Picture 1 (cartoon, rainbow, N blue to C red):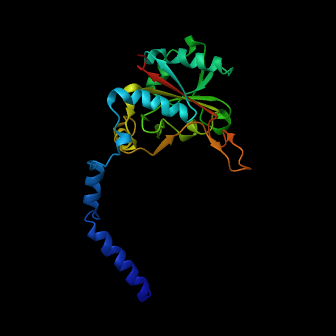
Picture 2 (cartoon, one colour):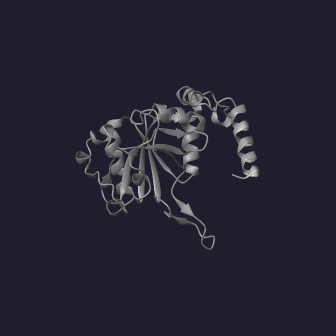
Picture 3 (cartoon, rainbow, N blue to C red):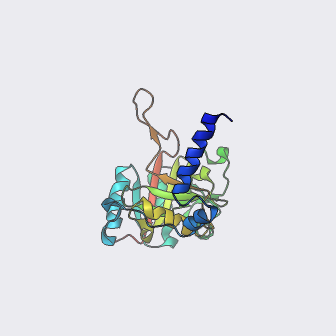
Length: 226
């Protein structure tokens, strides 16, 4: 190794050591007990305002939102949405016990758990979200063995099921919720932040929906009716 190269690496190592958290033990401690982060005022809405702010921001992103009184009413809300959209009454579900236990057939829906690209193309997926972000209206989802990323990228329509008490003020709270999600075992494979339907304006500055994911995003908000 040249002297110049050695000098560069020595400086990098020295700078990293000065930070005081370069050891494996320090890194492990930081992961297990993350220090509090600085949160901007926009990310700290009053609890009473978080729901309305989230809905407003989500609609601005191009999402639609429907109130739902209870988790058991989700299939009926999905049927109503798909009927309104003149879409097939079929949904693609993850291997999620909470969702699979619902009365989909009684709501007139057929269900599939296929996750291949061919099976998901042009369909409707229904998944849980770990959080909604009041600051921006985005929805946070994690992937894992039961939640393949393909469910959020390949279908034409993506329906999220979210409880009001899962609405976080800002993104800083999302990471805590991701760690606490029951299927993640402390660390999620991936955390995706969905800010409305997929779109692009790369070609001739013309807005195209569904370029990299769902054309529509619908959020069923449980316990949100005033």
